[in-house]
Amino acid sequence: MNKNRKVFIIISIVFIAFFVGVAIDMARRTTAPWNKKKQIIRAFDVTSEADSIGLDTTTVKVN
Image (cartoon, rainbow, N blue to C red; front, side, top):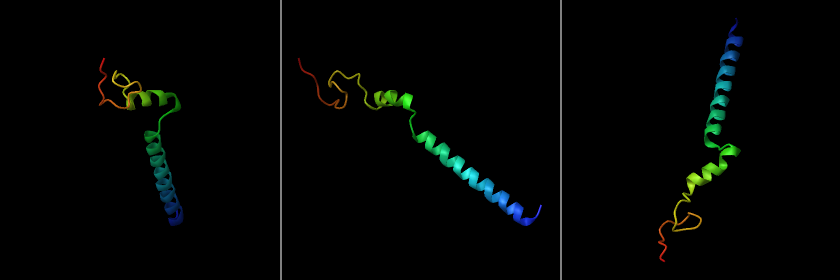
């Protein structure tokens, strides 16, 4: 194997590894379409009775 072929193979491996790393990072940061509803529920805890949409939990409901 000559020197040019070795350099090409090394650069190819580094290039592919870089894009695999970028793809894995993007996959971790995004949410799958079928999990979007679950993500919204976790972000806004709608179990609070103080607010109908669960955004402001500092108000207290007085009867």
